[in-house]
Length: 145
Image 1 (cartoon, rainbow, N blue to C red):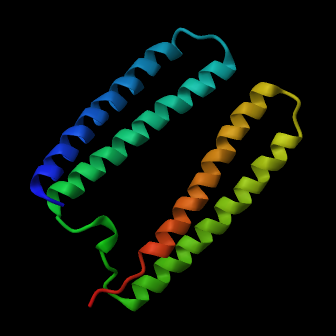
Image 2 (image 1 turned 60 degrees about the horizontal axis):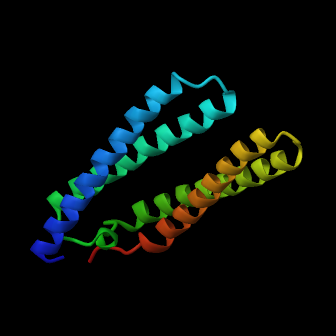
């Protein structure tokens, strides 16, 4: 990545990081104002998502400051490490798939639209986790020379 492009991206990420922190703090205050259990649960999800986003953005900034290597170009240095990691990630993929199936079943067992909404959010997260882990498995098994 060219220096100017890296500086521009860094500034954009820093702005987004501040927004995510502000959102988390704002939602904390809003949580104190609502009485609805569903609203509290959804706002709590938003708060944790904002904090998670902030953590990811901080990690990106840290990586960009320390390295000029593309993120997926980091290579595993030993075949054994590669196989152990792949096995553990595959186990996690299987757990995420099982969890997604459980949540989908739970959705069919309730008529409460609030519970369905919350379970649907969980299902969407589990599905996204499953896809993310598959991407990690597909892209992170290059051995270092």
